Image 1 (cartoon, one colour):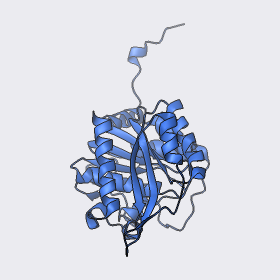
Image 2 (cartoon, rainbow, N blue to C red; image 1 turned 45 degrees about the vertical axis):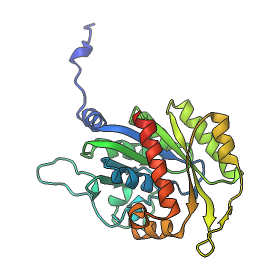
Image 3 (spheres, one colour; image 1 turned 135 degrees about the horizontal axis):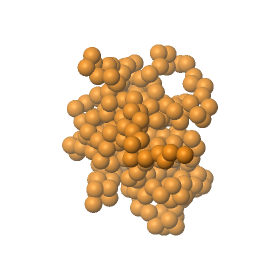
Image 4 (tube, one colour; image 1 turned 90 degrees about the horizontal axis):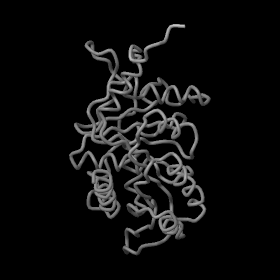
Length: 278
């Protein structure tokens, strides 16, 4: 039987596109949470805006197939991927000169139409997001995944190879940390360094008297940080302006730069840059 010379085997075109896109990205970070409703997409969007504001070239990739929210929060809802006549594959949507985004929402006609897909279809789409899109040179790719440790985050880590780190998002109450601790263990088992935890909705600052109120009480974030020897990147207070800016698709860090939450986001971004680029 004639031996096959592996050196003569050519790389498949789709694998070559995937590799070349990944090589154009310096740092890939995945934002994960153990449960829904903790503000994971809000953190992903504002971290991306903060990095872009700091002069970094940033991409946001939304791999939440069933509940994409990035398009609305970035103000690109209703926009579609465009293909120039000189290109075979479309580029992600430009949000501003330093920020690009891709989400399944840019590929479907009716935002009210549910996507009823099983695992293999979702895994295929996640691969196509990097394989059949012409990504520009990026300093950071922020990957927003759905809650939990299922198909989407697993597919990202296995398909996109080296992920530089995970950002864990949780609210303060202990019950939220039961799931957040699982995402920390998930990262460790997948050999993805945990950049740190973001404690979202940490307190509420009364707009009238300035008093800080712990609406969601608990020290679970602090305990998890101690138990797993990881950093708390920041504690984001509740701020209705964050919700308003997300609903309107406006960058919170630019529109409300003097708010306490915006300043805390800036600190989170500084810590991420320091930890990832050191």
